[in-house]
Length: 88
Image 1 (cartoon, rainbow, N blue to C red):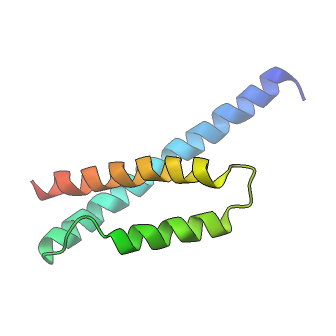
Image 2 (spheres, rainbow, N blue to C red; image 1 turned 90 degrees about the vertical axis):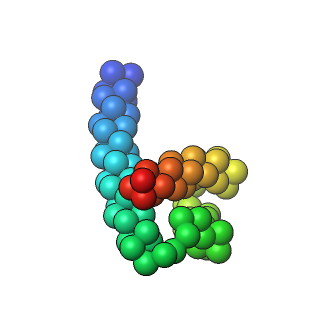
C-alpha cells in the first residue's frame, strides 16, 4: 500500500474517531442533565475507575495501557466539563 493510501485511511479513521467522540460528548451532556434533575454529582470516581479497568482489560493492543489511560483521562475530563455546562 502506498503512503498516500495509508494516509487516506488514517484520515478516514480520524473522521470516525471524531464522530464517535462527539457522539460520546452528546451522551455525556444528556447524563449531565439527568444527574442535575436527580441531584447527583458529576464526578463518580468508582464509575470512572471501573470504566478504565474494563477498557484496559479489553484492549487488544498495540496501544499500551498507559497510553490508553492517558487518552481516556482527557476524554473523561472533557465529558465532565460538558456535564457541568448543561447544569448552568
